[in-house]
Length: 275
Image (cartoon, rainbow, N blue to C red; front, side, top):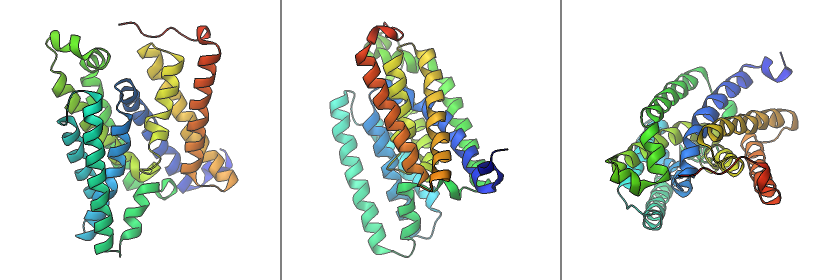
């Protein structure tokens, strides 16, 4: 057994990060495919307001985080069809939520550290009970993703054609955003709201730059996510650096590599998806 896995906190961190990397990257693939990266980032940051509000009333911060994130996901789903219209609404929801978070912290600063910790995560502070919740929530999210996979794929690639075929695109949009909200809520305490792109967006963006085939892209996304997240933990342990920073650095490095190699030799990689 490697030295870093001899400690309980590292074992918990590796297990929690592995689960979130697999779940988050699969959800993140469709986030990138549907051009909802801003919405994903906003949902993660909106959780800060929920955690701060829960601390204000003496409730569990995770409960407040989940309520705010799922509520925001519903608002985003109903905020408009086209990307531009929805991005404006998402920005306004994010602005209002962050303002509420600042107000809650100002009104009750005793538990401010717990709420602010949501912004950056605490992967080495994960315990067995949190891993159980992470596992259960991740299984529910993955089950939901499997249940709507076919209509979600069609609606993501060609929403107008999906509507013409009778697929309830609005319902699929709402269900997917709820899944994304649940995924964000469970991932944020581990990787942090500010660095959620490292899991949800980075691997999927790199994978889609290298392959346009959904099956290959999903597998590559999971592989890249595991390399980034577990590699970040190992670097963090030996270099004595924040784990989230190391994960984010690897995520950015692989994303930058995917862009450079794609533009340098586009014919080398698998063809883009048609239709």
